[in-house]
Image 1 (cartoon, rainbow, N blue to C red):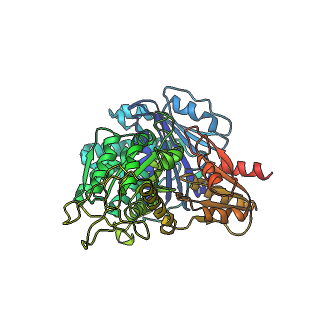
Image 2 (tube, rainbow, N blue to C red):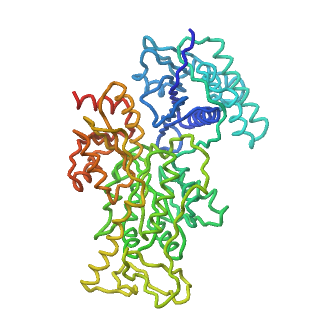
Image 3 (tube, rainbow, N blue to C red):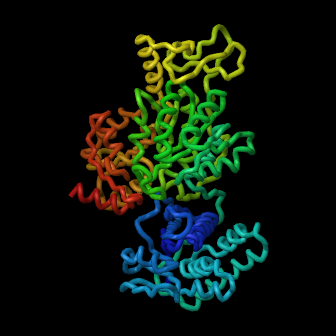
Amino acid sequence: MQGITKNDLIIRIGGEGGEGVISVGDFITQACAHAGLDVYTFKTFPAEIKGGYAMYQVRASTERLYNQGDTFDVLCAFNGEAYNMNRASLRPGTAIVYDSPGDFTPDIPPGVFAYPIPMTQTAKDMHNPRAKNMVAMGAMSVLFNIPVESLREVITAKFSRKGEDVVKGNLTAFEHGRELAQALGKTDPWTLGTPKGKQDVIVMSGNNAIGLGALIAGLDFFSAYPITPATEVAIYVARHLPKRGGTLIQAEDEIASISQVLGASYAGKKAMTSTSGPGLSLMSEMLGMAFMAELPCVVVDVQRGGPSTGLPTKHEQSDLFLAIHGGHGDAGRIVLSVESIHDCIDLTVVAFNLAEKYQCPVLLLSDGSLAFSTQNVPYPNPDDYHVVERKRWDGQGEYRRYTLTEDGISPMADPGTPGGMHIATGLEHNEAGLPSYASANHEAMQAKRFNKLKNVVNDVAPTEVDGEGAADLGLIAWGSTIGVVREALQRLRAEDYKVKGFYPKLLNPLPTQQFEDFGASCKRLLLPEVNFQGQLAHFVRAETSLRPESYTICGGMPFTPEMIVNKVKEILA
């Protein structure tokens, strides 16, 4: 059958954890990106160290991508479990590449194009059973026009450190896969669009991008405690922070981690840690101390399914209540939320700038989907970023650490600064830092700490409004759900629906006037989010006059554009 160029192709690879499913996805992603295609990936894997169902979805396009897409065009099933997990999504027109003979015999639905490839047997015949994934990738490169030279380059680069024999073995398996696919012949209509040519881009995951953003912001100290799905932030920082003279320490638990961060901040260093929901819960008391002692720090929360241990490797947006109000007493903090890989870089710099300027904890919310998703972004130039340093004492006069100022921000003195000795504890204190339990003093200090946060909205880019004029329905989205809503709105407008989008990145303090202005231009509002309670919708209703309708899911997977489109049509019907 003659191939029809598809500007947007989605390939899903599924199989047993440890079979090389994730590696194949990474190779295809890197090859497509380096050839000039836009890529967006999504992956999910079991909580166990090895074994269980693993899935990697690659979306590649000649046009800009914002999310992982609805469902696949092509399924590559390494085993029977992968086939069974995705059988319901094999719609007419889709294609399946599967291991045959293997541990299953697929019942191919009508209208589905099937390509049996002896992946396991070919690898065994080569006396290289681990090369099964290379055979599969070679076959797919022929069938769906995946840039073959780019694939060969990334395979060579990946295995070169293991020696020439390893490189040769994997490339040979790759070529065998290509021969097997060519012998079958192509029957489906889909082929990936022509790449633009090599691009000066970097392919990064959300976790790695956060680490890069921290380095650009001037990170000095990172305290790490491993937790899924945030550990890769620490791994990236551990690899690169020492190159610029910084320090990373692995703490014994999350409480020690945030305590070390505050100690480093007190010592005058830019400091951060990364965690997920259970770890953030343990950090709540020390985040209160950071607010009380006015210590700058950044905490990255890569949200996962909860509560308790919950779904460690799955996606959710359910830590907003905890991020904004997690802690005893009136403890404030700034909360930001990232949308994309590029955001992970940019907003991490913003998080440090806000922490340093306002001398308080800043929580940066990512999520399990974005943590492991990869996108191609232009190589960031550190010189393009504005980096803020904390207000430091000039050494003149008597030093009072918490002196009351017009903007609520008091100069800081690093330990060892002549004349700058001061106390910073969790106790309420007077301007000099000495403990004080007087009612009037506590009220004055709380007003100081909270009032300075009123200016935060001026230091964050205004919330993006997607669309113009009046709308029958406005969608408010946060986190990685924004990218899904962007594409859904494009589809809806193509069908003449009057819809708009509103994408806040600053979630606390909430930019209420911006919400009000957006709401005034829409007849109705819908707020989709991946949690059970509708957490941002709760805050919007509490702090503005708006009454958005909640649309929530919490099954461990992100929204798809199709889900948003269908919900909007249902509401407007």
